[in-house]
Length: 92
Image (cartoon, rainbow, N blue to C red; front, side, top):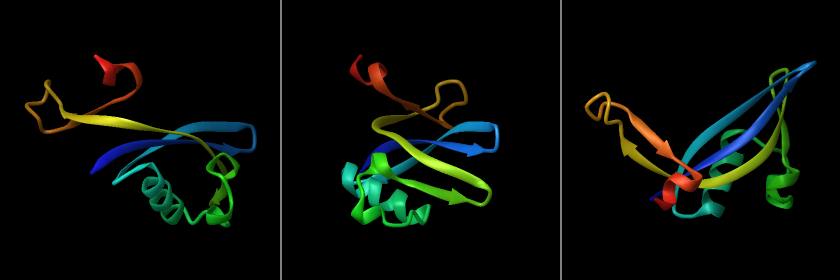
């Protein structure tokens, strides 16, 4: 299984917030399907992810990005937690 970070932005009136979900799946397409199901995104199967938007209570959410991450044990807490490495940290 691979881990993917799916980023999205939420809007509530004049406020906005960046959010991420970490999904374990075989590949990117499977991760997107799981994410769409968890967030009950209407029409997700008929749209490209960059067109996804959905309501989470009073918040309007919009898909932003998906990227693979590498999850490692946290060296500072004797492996009790996890750290997700993204982007350039994966290539070192």
